[in-house]
Length: 175
Image (cartoon, rainbow, N blue to C red; front, side, top):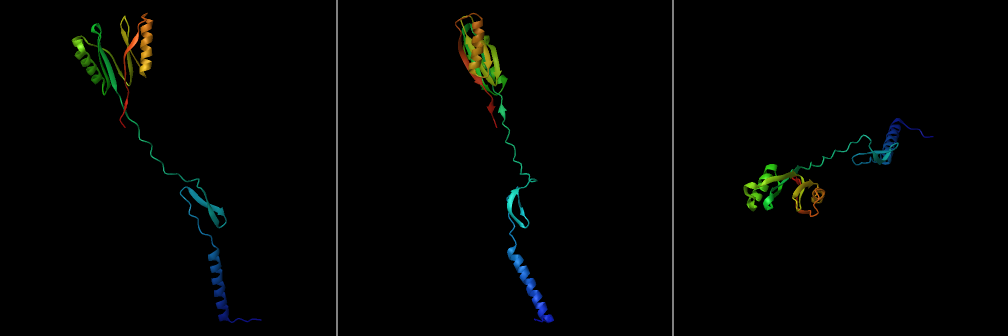
């Protein structure tokens, strides 16, 4: 039988403690680095798998910039007895559109007899003429405005209706 003295017993205990700590050191698992929004999980000390973190709130993305539109205006001025037409499209204001259409009518021979027939914004216009006269209509497209004008013209009983002029002054994206 082996008899240990005190000094030998101390050395043996120190060696056992060192052996135990070295064994635990080499068998410990490495901690997993998970990406944002994920947490390590697993069983016991084995936390080697990443899963969703239910308490994670992702950084909010800024909303897209607001789109800004500028209103655009148009106008038609006429001197009917001479068949003179003045028009304006894509103007920044109603007054710009009216003044431009009136000036165009005057320059084309209407002089001081020109009258403002119609002004419109962010849409289209059509002028339909016939043997009996004319009418102007607005709509979301030139086709729609022309259809409205043709319907008004044919309802008056004139079979010789046709679109004489059409244009649009649609909003302009500025941002």
